[in-house]
Length: 195
Image: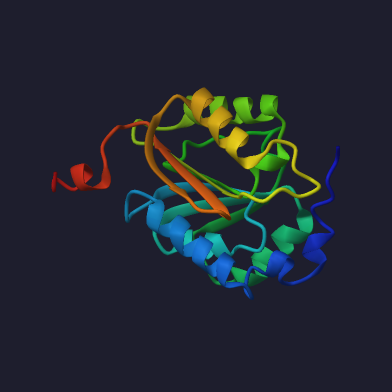
């Protein structure tokens, strides 16, 4: 099944990213769950309009924000005008993996559009290219919808099992599931010498 990701991005605010409290809260939770203040080099897969990208850019050395939709990249470019440490790229990440190593990789509302084999390959690509302190965050809507290929819970479990890293944090409620994995086992407090 080929999903048209350009169609929703004909609107300036697809899915109500800027209107709904759920979306604002989701962005805040995602930002808070990343285990370090200075994010280094970040890969955001599925950047859409660039609202999460803005939060990442404030804490990152460099952000590569990728989306399969050319329309999404156009909207993100407008929303991120003047943000110097962000590079936007129109690409299908399942077909071409970017060359540099990334300290943090985020997939937000992306994994449930992928088949199991694509999720496994994505986890393998991340594992193969990540530094010793690499971190991956997945955040997904938990309610079903017509275009779901792999349900959220199954996508997170499959991806985490293939990645094989330490489960650092998880947040779940009726609407949202967030997982954070780290190649290193240290919690935030341990990283800062508090525990």
